[in-house]
Length: 590
Image (cartoon, rainbow, N blue to C red):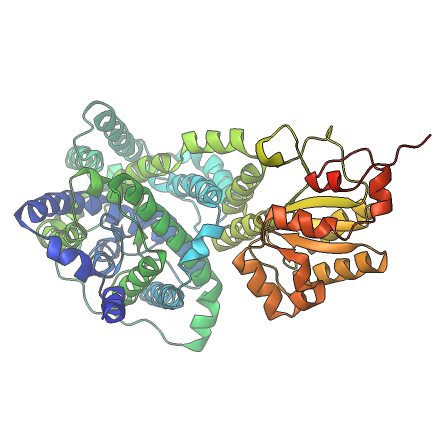
């Protein structure tokens, strides 16, 4: 019965929180959803502009995908929809294949959204939610900082009313802007500045107000005033144009094999980044609300939301930190709040879409400058710079890659580097020598180099799993012992820090056991975990080492190993570091 219940909640996770709904929770979710819908209105248009999509598609991406992700995800506060990172990667990936804003471009975006959703769903069903644990947070920090600079640079033409060729890299854009400085349009720049400054002022002095909406309205009013006084021909202020006031129309991705082949690398990059972002946000809010996030379920929820979005005119959606954080702060109790946000957004769009005819591109540029600035996490960047050289390297590579490479390659570079550094870290397990310390209760093992060692037995502790990546480090440690302590023919491994050993790791232990036996000594394991025992047994390495050489306690190990030591050496030894040494009389030379 419990198995069937677990299966149902896995495919229908809303069954977990749905019974918790009451008048109090629904009211909190309703207010939080309304707040989220108001906030996503300017953001959706802004993100669609970044993505090279018609503005209404940014709003569509916050409707159906948000509802589906809330229904099938695990987080109670995560809100999915269009985000800056996904938008800029989408633009970078698709602008080489089609003109941004064209129907061909939109079809490519829908196709990528479907591909991302399928990959996410497959990873979730395959229970690979732990995948994001291997992607360093520094990748996110570095990429978003680089993306912020790119967003601002691509809006220079709309902010200052100049002509800059599209599709160039950062240095191309800056060079083109330098040559266009004499042609800056003062009217356009004034609208952009009013938008930018009003947004900054509201965020600083009236933080409870939706600063993006206030900034958008302020810029639009200045644009209307300038146009009415001087005329459109004089001011040259272009507007976004009226948005269609309709429900998200049905759409159809392309199933062309060539298209899928071309979009595969970018789709994989977007998937890795989107899942990392969504799960990280979910876990961050879960830690504050006392909820445990299921990474696998979150993969499934994100996958289904993008699959649904691709057929309802939405482009790639993922967890939004701003909207999710606002959702939590606004008092959301369950995922119903995110569903309300999607539904309210539909209603709001039907009412205010025609007003976009008065929204100038310059005001959108000012809003995107605000968005770009908010993306740069200066506190986290400073923290990474101070705390770790490795993480600084990962962040730096991703940041520079975002500025000077294609964005999907920047993501891959950061992810691969974080994985390489992780493997380098785990490929060098901690290996230390241990000896009984008579000063400690029970003569516990210690690493104090001043303590005497047994002339026949060396005790080594290994903290880390023995797999193909760590074998070289372990072999070097064994070789070092043989070189510096040739008289210690017996070697005991304290294995309580070893979780498992693969075939290569088991083979190395068998080889060392054979070497020790050939020299008249022995190889022993003590405090063996079940995982290590099972992995050694499965590859028949346990028989080769010798079951009698494996001990589950320190006392049993020292008693058993002592019986195999050369008692002639023991009689001449003055170290006497084991209790068992007292059983052998010491010979005193004349």
